[in-house]
Length: 251
Image (cartoon, rainbow, N blue to C red; front, side, top):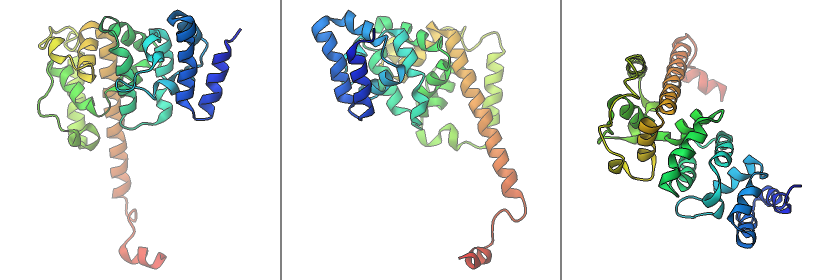
């Protein structure tokens, strides 16, 4: 039988009261204990659980974030694409609040996401505008010190993107050079409880998942090239861009 608080939580979320929904769930922990809340979370629809967790990060901790299990978290977080957050800043903040609540469990949470259908996409999205930096780390084992967000992959030319794709392909086919190399930096040197430490853990403790993230980013670069080439073809066609006289006469 579904716990009444699960129904109440869904109703509050539909009404836009995420704080009330979180409070309703937190009351279970207060009255019945954390284990009881973990059991209740098994019945909370993943979309509702995600809606609640998105409202909290390291600066606004939630009881839900403190007790959610790796499997519960993974089932919820793979639905993040529904929010169409271009920078994925909210995703990273929410994930960090759970991933780094206990350093000894971080890898377990990351592994659960990687094993979920759609998990590679979520982990790639987690790095958001840092995808250029992540690929640099994948290729060299070191983080660049001259990172510039304005020079992200979205602003790169077709030739640059093709060169990057070729570089990734070579690394992927050279005896696992991405995942098998020895660390050039230690975890303590990247211990930011954010994207950099996450990248290190994925590369050196969950290498298979890390490689799939790199492949996901590589495929996104290829799609970006296809879009740019298609746009270039369209713009090169005669009559594609209306003349100033035509635009004026149409007004």
